[in-house]
Structures are given as C-alpha cells and as structure tokens.
Length: 260
Ligand SMILES: Nc1ncnc2c1ncn2[C@@H]1O[C@H](COP(=O)(O)OP(=O)(O)O)[C@@H](O)[C@H]1O
Ligand SMILES: [Mg+2]
Image (cartoon, rainbow, N blue to C red; front, side):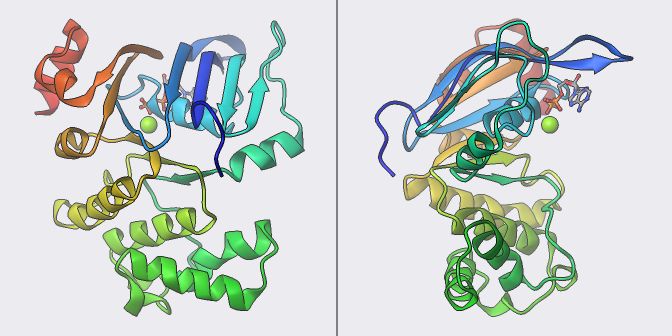
C-alpha cells in the first residue's frame, strides 16, 4: 500500500506504568520519531531503557498515555489527561494489520506445524481460504529457507528455524512495516546468522523495519539509522555508522564499550 509520508511515526509518545498502584514509572518518555519507507531503524540501549515499550507502542500492544501513533494510513491519538484510553477495536485491528512483529521467544503455537503457524493469521484474521493460505505459507517458508520443514512442529526445529517460521508468519500477511524485538537474543551464536541473513534479505527487498538488537554488526551493515534509548528517552537518533563510530553522549559511549 502506498501512503504519503512516513510509514511509522510517533509524536511525543509517553507510556507510564503503574508502580505499586501509583502511575509514576515512565517506560517511555516523550519519544518522537519518523520511519520512512524502506528504512531500517535499529534501537539500542541498556536493559530497561524502553526499547520494547517503544515497539509495543507502535502497534498499540502498549497503549500510550500521551502522544500520537501513526502507522500507514491509521492514526491514533491519546486523549490529553486521560489515563489508559483504549483505542477502538476497529482502529487497533486496522493498525495492527499493517505491522508484523517478531519476538525474542518466537511465540509459535507448539501444536501446529510450521505451515499451520504461518497460515493461522491469514485464515483467522484475514478470512483467507485454507488452500490459498497454505500455498502462501509454503512460499513464505521457502523464502526463509525452510521449504523442507513445512510439516515440522516447533519442537522439531532449531531455535534459528523457529525464529524464521515466526518471520515467515509475520511477513505472510504483507505488513508495511516489521518490528523485531531482540530476535536473536535467545539463540545460540551459531544459529543467529541464519536469522540475521533473512532479516538482511527483507531489508534489501525494501521492507521498513524497526529492530531492537545488540548485534552491532547487523546494525552497522543493515541499519540506516540508530536510535539510542536511555531511561525511556530517545537520546540519540542518527546515521548508524556515525553513531557506532562516534556516539555523541557519554551514555551511548559507555553502553557501546560495555557490549563490544
Ligand atoms: N508491563 C509493564 N509493567 C510495568 N513496568 C513495565 C512493563 N513493561 C515495561 N516496564 C518497565 O518499563 C521500563 C522499560 O522497559 P522495556 O521497554 O521492557 O525496556 P527494554 O526493552 O529496553 O529492556 C522498564 O523499567 C520496565 O521495568
Ligand atoms: Mg526489551
């Protein structure tokens, strides 16, 4: 789908989590960003800095307390001063339909085969006929290098293969943007490459992506932009290589020296 303007934008988005009943803890603090078509934006930052919350605000898995979220042609704005406003179901559905998300722990259905896992969004959310969904599932699994695993259950797949099924499932619904939350963090080092290379292919095909990862090699070679998060804020936002070679803030410098 072609929409003018950014594919994803957040304007002054904040998310407060109740802490012992009092809403004080800012998971996300006044974050604004725009992601243009085909851009790969990498989110870096220490644990607890708000990276997952940011991703989850993009597809409204977390409902921001303040600000505006836009994905494609759907815009949702938090009402000022009102806590935990729920978007209408229709808004949620049309926004979420446009984004695919991949999690650290795959979230596959254990009782379904790879093919059935990829089919389920097509059949249940989009109402597609099973034959057609099955054919799309096989094509998407082939695209991530799993043509010979379509009948395997998750327990019969390696971690890297499971994550590629999760990616195939997310892209099968033809999202305009993909969100990845530490997609390789649960994998043994030797299994990470296969997942990163599928992500690299997706980026090369022009997919718009927001990726939380500690893989600095991927950030450098595939990322266009890096946003560095600290305490719920986006404190640096710029060219990926420039950031990696020459971070501007002490916090980012310290972070990079610790994970390198
Ligand atoms: N559902 C939640 N309830 C309460 N606090 C949360 C919840 N989700 C995240 N937080 C808090 O918000 C902050 C940001 O978390 P998160 O976005 O998960 O960080 P990151 O992904 O960078 O590690 C952390 O302090 C975390 O404890
Ligand atoms: Mg996280």
